[in-house]
Length: 88
Image 1 (cartoon, rainbow, N blue to C red):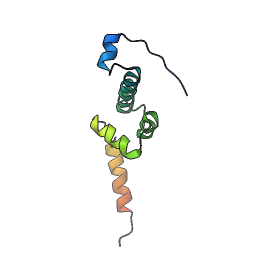
Image 2 (image 1 turned 90 degrees about the horizontal axis):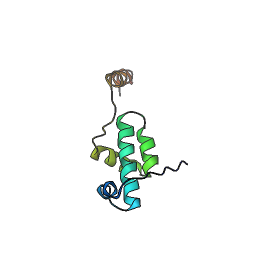
Image 3 (image 1 turned 45 degrees about the horizontal axis):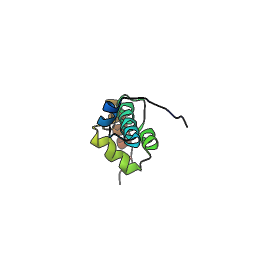
Image 4 (image 1 turned 180 degrees about the vertical axis):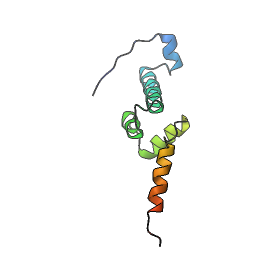
């Protein structure tokens, strides 16, 4: 585990909830959102970082407009896979 210490002014801290616990959580969540949006953090890493369940992570990311990364290549791969499935 890595522990990080930040020093911010009381005025800035007030914008993030005022208490050290609230400030820490707000900043951790902001880092998780930015980390996921930039591609540095996977959904699993966000879940681990924030201590959330799978469903809570999905809700958290959706609430912050962090949608699943699904490229055209992903779509094409899924289409190939579906085309190769045996018919029932």
